[in-house]
Length: 274
Image (tube, rainbow, N blue to C red; front, top):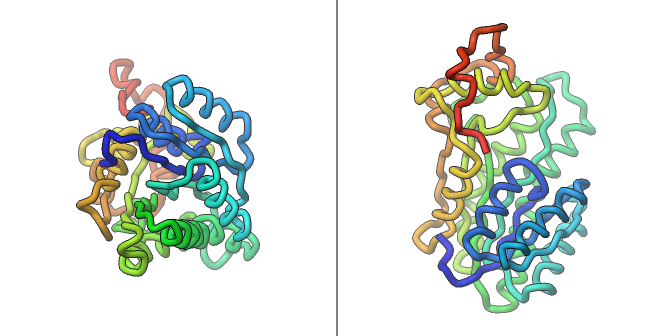
């Protein structure tokens, strides 16, 4: 993982959910954090204050990741504030419920821009800035376990972008070397998705993996910390408690709905969610 010397970590989509946990994980280990957000300004600023309370430097930076100019500006602002960037975590994503062939072209374009194009453009801007300064760094792409062994018809436009990102990781690892090392993590079910209730999430968590539990966002952050270390480049790392070992033909969001009273009281809290 990153050394104990304080580093600068940029996490996209850091204001909420998994991105927030990743940002806090690095801050707790004495690293400075750039909190990227799209529209969740209040959440982003609250996270900045939490990180500063830990004694670390932090800034919140708004950027529309569908805008190539905004992506360059995000990297520029990071270097202007800290003079360096040691780790970029491409965590932001857009999630649409659609299927082929009935997807909307505008939705496809927006989903592709965030899930596929933005991480590549961010890595490009990062690589250029680091090379200019004769620095090195790391990129970790947050993909999805479904593109490993669980392709199905749901969330078509989202999956297109994530599949591209996963397949691009090794190409970026080759192309950006020796300036950047590039790795990918593949999370599974970790938090309630979309309209999924907490009860349905707990129910799914016990049935979606061979371990009868899911990996947590903290588990994902720890994997990112590991892959940020100097021994890794072009690595795919699955963090899903074995979810990919159970091929399915639809998303677990739709597969597992808790029937009333099915979950015993002593199993009502799995303890695996942040």
